[in-house]
Length: 163
Picture 1 (cartoon, rainbow, N blue to C red):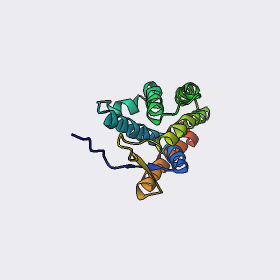
Picture 2: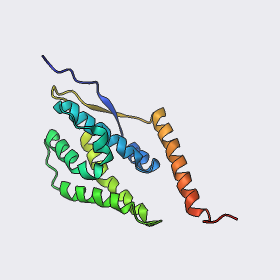
Picture 3: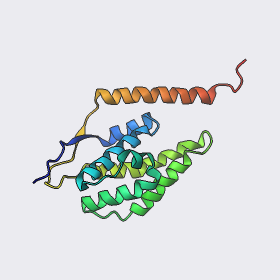
Picture 4: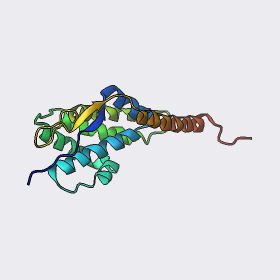
């Protein structure tokens, strides 16, 4: 019996990917990781628990990058440094204001992983993802992100004890 592949899923363009990651304070990267782990689980027909792996991406980023490199067929000589940069970026988010902005350095490995995802194929050679343009769901995500940024900004500039 032959395997029937799911239809190709949308994958945002590189610029939109960066905008959504910054606009949602990094929450979009969780969705991206979930989609990649779900794809790998479907392709290899195994249970990978994509939500758990996306939530604990600090531990599973290396595995995801290695699996995508294996499926892509192209070795990445900088992958070890990208893994370290991703973990370092996540750890930098715990710095006090305003130094946590340094955590956006974790976008560099994510953008490289995003570029690799556009080349992924199913076992029969059909594309697993297609590049999508700005859609209403992206506007909703950015609206949620604006609320998060507003809340952060309000907490940053609000006095500790309002009188």
